[in-house]
Amino acid sequence: MAGVEICRKVRELPAVQALYIILLTAKGDRKDIIEGLEAGADDYITKPFDRGELRARLQAGVRILELQRKLADRVKELEEAASHIKTLQGFLPICCYCKKIRTDQNYWQQFEGYISQHYELRFSHGICPECYKKIVKPQLAERKKMKADDKSLPAE
Image (cartoon, rainbow, N blue to C red):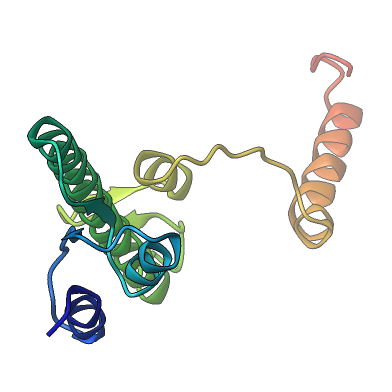
């Protein structure tokens, strides 16, 4: 079986780990080189070859495989982090009264603190119209009434 055919067969295998294939052949025609690279070879050297060049190309292949391994490891880490985020989005114990979140250590923590600690998020605070109407406006009215009743309170 020719090197080009071997490349095609190997590249078709689904479970093959990362391989760096260098075709070392007497076929040095441009169309042969293109055919070999298109078949799945990562590099192509023609005979007669120089041992130093072969060694350098093998070292380049090792560097490429190492970078691919590191990239695959990083992808796996990111997939695990994404899975953790999906889990977080799916279920997060929160107090229905004070809205604190129960941590993995069974400690109740303010929502903003928990999220800021686990994710690179910062919060800005405001008051929604509904809470303003239900909570803030009555408090302001009560404070205004208290000021009218008690002149000792400082004016705003």
